[in-house]
Length: 109
Ligand SMILES: [Zn+2]
Image 1 (tube, rainbow, N blue to C red):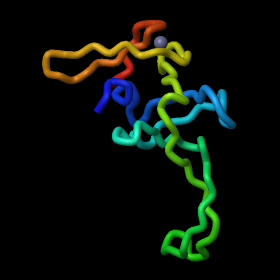
Image 2 (cartoon, rainbow, N blue to C red):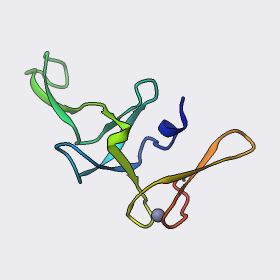
Image 3 (cartoon, rainbow, N blue to C red):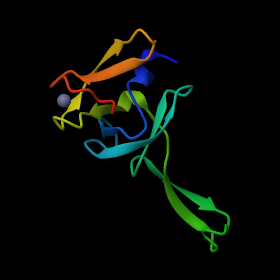
């Protein structure tokens, strides 16, 4: 896993930097380290035909978020509410603490 994908975690709010969803924000639903991509709620939506299931007996067209490259998004700091670069500090245990480069707030709860 590279450091860059470690800057993103499930539950983060991110803002889109380019493409059709530019400027929109969403919550990270999944981080895909091997693909260097993120699945973000309500962003990069694609329509798919689905077969009928118990939840959706009719089947039909369902819109879902498709994975997007992490280079297209930035984390939005939950404290200062700005898109920010993330500072990573490695702890002795080998885990990382993420902090906002604007306000210095810790981004991990
Ligand atoms: Zn901040």
